[in-house]
Length: 41
Image (cartoon, rainbow, N blue to C red; front, side, top):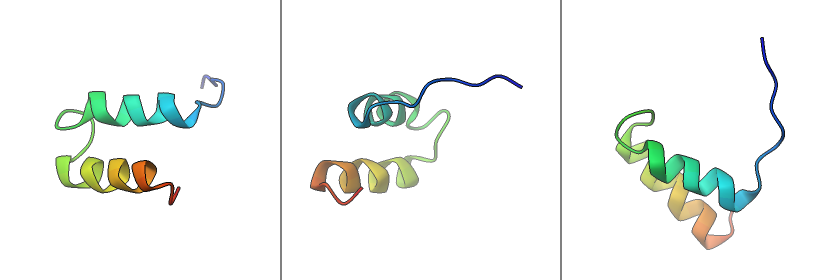
């Protein structure tokens, strides 16, 4: 098992956007991106 450093909110957002439709279900990714953009998480 490997570990990695915590991502900044911007980096996490970019990873979700990059993986939308491949790593992440597009509906899930859209919800997460909206929540991040609204500052809810």
